[in-house]
Image (cartoon, rainbow over all chains, first blue to last red; front, side, top):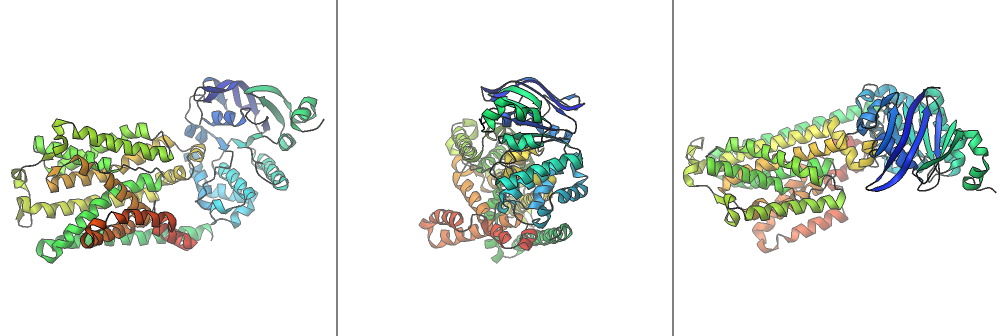
Length: 239
Length: 338
């Protein structure tokens, strides 16, 4: 299989404090790849480095065969690397509609706004009902939907979703996970999910990486990782 | 409301704003021209001149504070840079005020680029404090540079003004009239800049930064470039006003041109009207300036109290400002009031 994203020996951190100590991973085209691990393992940091909000100290990030290690983040978005940030990162004072339009900020996405809106409403019909509501007044689940929808408006080739289940009731979290799966199936977009809730992530993913204190500890097909006794003990809370 | 209706309401709102802005400029122009021929209008000319001086700073500030969400607490620094640049050119080189204004604006833009390079790395309260520090630093440095007149300032000779004339008024007699029209030009430019920011893709990017800078970066906005450009644009009209006032008052003084009071007054005006709205800048400045003038003439020693009262009022009752509050009332108004 062809890979859409390849990270090789990535080192980064905040200020002078290193967080990632040589992370290598691949996202295959059209797949859902999960990056799991506990609090503080460096999952969010990895995503922030991929989208370019954090500089890469050492190592290489290759997106669709092109080295983007030194590309500024706004250009990476234009190339199709889109992050749905943790804590949703929606614009609370803007309406749902305005948030969606903001998603299509890059030049490539701007010309296809009408088209993208239709596709987004097809997946998230609830957002259409809330079009003129301020995003800050949406429920948690709706805000997460909006965050993902806004990500889709940017016409991603690789959509990275950070902790989509965070703070959501289990039923809603599962609904969001199903929607992520639909995005892959209907839009053919490659997806990288980061989850603390290992169970949700392994359920929808094809392949998974386990991150521990800034290093990849384990990798493999999601169903195999889910059966790994170590993983079960450490993350799934079973003995 | 469907997307199509939103666009229609937005277009209608823009029309209302255009008409309001045009009406304000026309009214100010009429009063200015009228004052050339009528004694009674001269009083309004002076009141409106001070109004437009404050308004010029407000219009600049609204771009960085209102649209971008960066509370520039020492925005008068650009008023000072503009005033001093113009004065140096007029005092030492005899440059006319028109050219001095243009150079003053360019100097302020260059300064904004340089200052922004440092202070725009900070966010929230840290940014606000840094901008106060910059303002104070400029004031202290200028007070101690002999070339700039130190704490005594620089003062133009009466002979400098001989070349100016308007509608039969010559030399120093013409200054108040010419300054009025120059301020009106500055205000017009400021309004156009605000309208541009309000309606452009660039402005949408700034609003995203105001809402959540990290998210803005994640959706592909070059935040550094955007906020630097906003800061540079926000320095133009304050600098022009500074240059005009330096010329009009024929003197520059450190504490009057690098003034924390002027900075705070412009913040109050922006917040009172509604940060990040075009109509709010006019409303806020007009109300603040009117109230201040009334207090200044009726209760001269009490006028500073309105600072406190207004700030407390905004914070407690109207955190969104008057226009911002009206926009909250209904979806319709949100699209109608720009």
